[in-house]
Length: 74
Image (cartoon, rainbow, N blue to C red; front, side, top):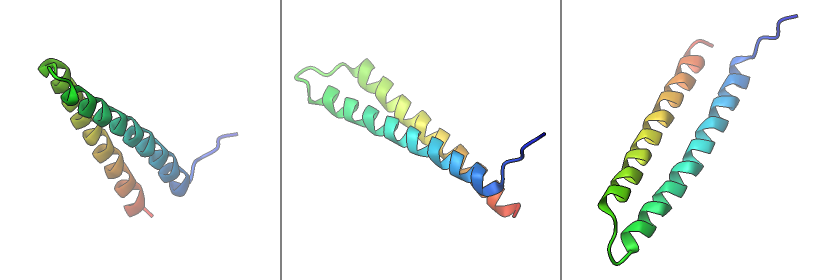
């Protein structure tokens, strides 16, 4: 027996992924704030945090695009 997910179920799963990425992204943003608050922030560490934040934004955009695709196919 094959079970097929509905578009609504798929969107709910994608939204869950987006929320998890957003939570992780916020944690990285806090890490960046903490790094920049040091008397001698490490530019390499700060840059790494910024890169991670940017990558997460791209992931969220890709998932949002998938939601749009699912929504338009209904």
